[in-house]
Length: 91
Image (cartoon, rainbow, N blue to C red; front, top):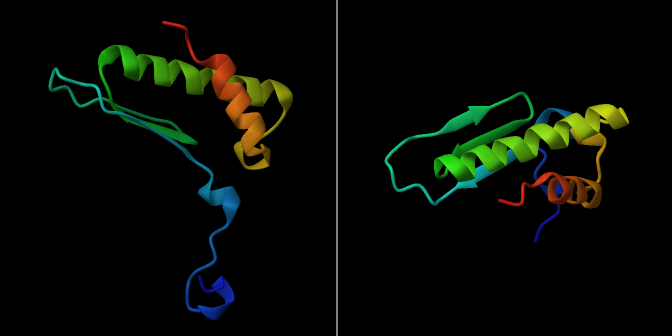
């Protein structure tokens, strides 16, 4: 794989601008198109139950980040994974 510096014409993406979580549900059978968007996350599709769980999970995750005084851009992948696991509803 070639290094990025071999392509100087490509725009440099600022990770603070690019940080965004994306949820995709694939279990919808009722024909509804569910979309939930916020500043730092987007959720598309899923059954009503799945979509609601994904929305709840990410809302609680961002609440926890706010309590910790951290932004998504400042959060490690491991910490984010732990928060998402903690905030995922059981049923």
